[in-house]
Image 1 (spheres, rainbow, N blue to C red):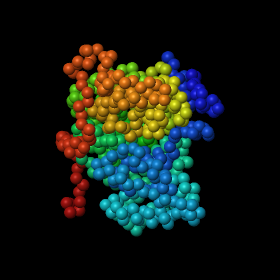
Image 2 (cartoon, helix red, strand yellow; image 1 turned 45 degrees about the vertical axis):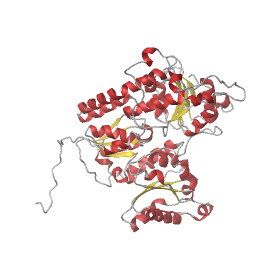
Image 3 (cartoon, rainbow, N blue to C red; image 1 turned 180 degrees about the vertical axis):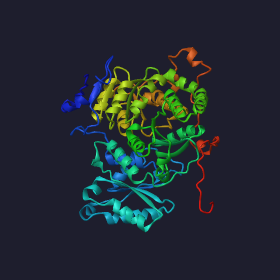
Image 4 (cartoon, rainbow, N blue to C red; image 1 turned 90 degrees about the vertical axis):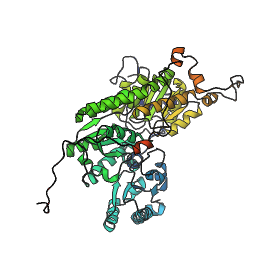
Length: 527
C-alpha cells in the first residue's frame, strides 16, 4: 500500500493510513486510504458536524419552509447562506434563518417553552408560510427536549401548519454525512405518503440528491420537461415541502448525489417498489449517457437524443476552446464529497486538466473507490485532511488551481494558488451542457487572471517588473498555441449570458399525449 506520510502529521502516525499516492498500474485494491472514520484527536479536521449535514446540505434547500434550529444562535448562522441554494419563490429559504437562541439558563431549566414560543412567532411573522422544519442541535439533544411533542402541540393548535422534526445533533455521526442519513430516514418515516400526488404525465420521477446550487436543478429539470417527464419532487433543491410528501407516487427515482441521498432512494425502493437510477449532470458525455438511460427506462430515447444533439451542437465548440487552453494544467480536486468522483475523470477527458490530488472530508470508502479508480496515476488521495496537510500538498504539487470550499480556498489564496468554489460555485450553474462550459470558463479565468499573476510576486524580495505593460487573459493563454488553434473559426469563448436560469422559468414545454390515463373514479353522484 503506497501510503503517503505528511511531514506535518508525523506526530500523529495514524494519519499515514489516510493518504495514498496512486502509482502506475495501481487500483483501489492497492491505493485506497482509510475513510469515514472518527476524526483522530489533534488533527484539527475541516469536517462539518451531523447537524450541518442535515440542515445545511439537505434541509435548507426546501424553498417554502421556515427552517428553525433549536439551539444556540451560532449553529444556525454557521449553516446559513454559505451555499447558493436558490429557488424560484424569491429565495425565501436564503433570506431568513431562525433559531431559538438557547442560553445557559435553558440548559439548566429546559427550553421546550422557548421553542414553542419561537415556532409561533415565526409562523406569525411569515403568515404565507405554513410549513416548518425543526433541527435538533447538541445543546437541545443533551438536555432531552422533546421537540416532536412541542411540534405536535403546535400542529394541534394550528391545523393549517405542518412541521417536520429532524433529530440530528452535531455528535450524531463522524461527520456531516451522518446527518445526511438521519434526515433522509426521518423524512421518509414522518412525511412521505402523507400527501397524494397529482400525476400529469406517463413518466414521473423524483429527482433526488440535487440541491439547486445556483440553478443546477432548474437546468436539469428543463431537460426532463423537454422529454415529457414530470418531476414530482426534488429532494431537496428548489423543492416544495408538500411535493416531497408525495414522493411515493413516482415511477423512478433519479439519483444525482449518492453520498447525500441514496438512503431515501433505497427506502423508497423497499417500501414502495420505486426503482433507482443513478445519473451524472456534469460533463457532456456523462450527462448525455444519463439522459439516454432515463429515456431508455421510459421508452422515449428519441426525445433524449434530440436534446443531446441540439445541446452538443450549440455548446461543444465553446468547450473545445477552453480545452485547448487548459490542457496540462494541474488541479487539486478537493470538493469534500461526491464531486471528487463526478469530476475526477471528466475534467481530464473533456477539459484537458490533470488531477494531481483529490480528497474527501466526509465521504465514505465508496467515494474514494470511485474517485481513485477514475483519476490518473500520481494522484495524491487524502481522507479528512486538515489545513496543514492541505498546505503541504499544495507546496509539493504546485497546482495551477484548486476546486474546494471557502475555508480551504481562502488558505490557498494566501499561498498564491487560485481556487474555485466547488460547493457553492463561482459563476454557476455548472450542471448541464451550458453549465459545463461555464465551469470551464471559470477555471480559465482563475488560472489566467492577470491580477493573479501579480499575486505570485513576493514584493518583500522579488523585483517588480515594470516592462510588462497591459495584459489580458487571452494574451497569457494563447502565447504558446498554434495559429490553427488561435485562428479557428469553429471554436469560440463562452457566449451565454450572466444569468442562464431565469429564462428557464418562463419557458413553454411540449405537451405529449398521455397513453396511460387512469380511469376516473366513480362517485355516488356519478353513479
